Image (cartoon, rainbow, N blue to C red; front, side):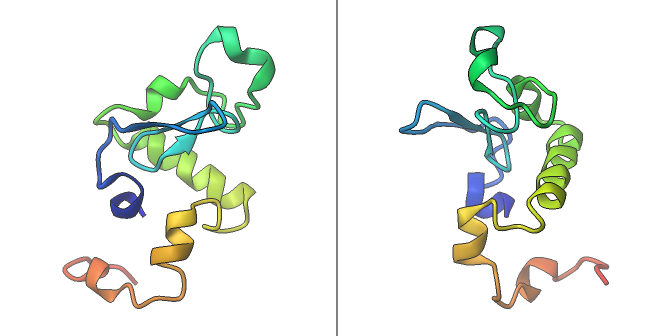
Length: 102
């Protein structure tokens, strides 16, 4: 997921046509999941209760926690279009090679 969303770039920010921004390694959207600034509070849902700036650091803890929350609330990985296009239903064994994933 991180590879296809941001090429593993923890500081990536992508401005979208709707005026929102996707942030960090998992490209988490500012409209629904995080808060860009206090100026935009009325237009943002901020389900993760976090500033978007917390998602664009080299520390992955917050980004992983929010990605897990998105997966839980969305009942799976389908929030990410690139997951559906590149990963869903595909053989992911090359990404697990060398890991002790069960």
